[in-house]
Length: 161
Image (cartoon, rainbow, N blue to C red; front, side, top):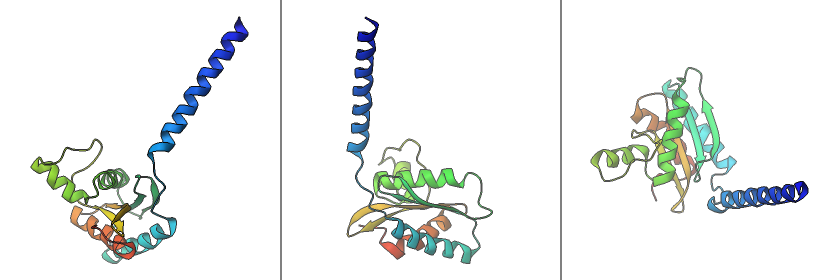
């Protein structure tokens, strides 16, 4: 009897683990933000921030909101990573800059995304009209954060479709 219960339990665990694996793999499409693209964008964004003397955190993600590259410059605040992550989240979910998303939430024309922020600094990156990811910066004024992100995005694509 004990052996039979053990076999049933093992079969159920196997089925549960295989359906979880299948469900996780089915929803996510392959990353369109390559390491090489992220490196090119990061070099440009970091150079821009350093030229301005801004101590920021810069996050580059793919369209699935998976991190591809992160740089936290010396002197960047402890919470800048969290803010950059929240900016990238709304960019990848909407295809809008985090500032435009925020304006729409404030106007009541868009529902807020849980965990997102409503201020500038995150920008989408498009190639051939297709969203490939986001660049999000945090550490200075929101408009300045967006300048850093735009400097990176301009080197690998555009911020509009």
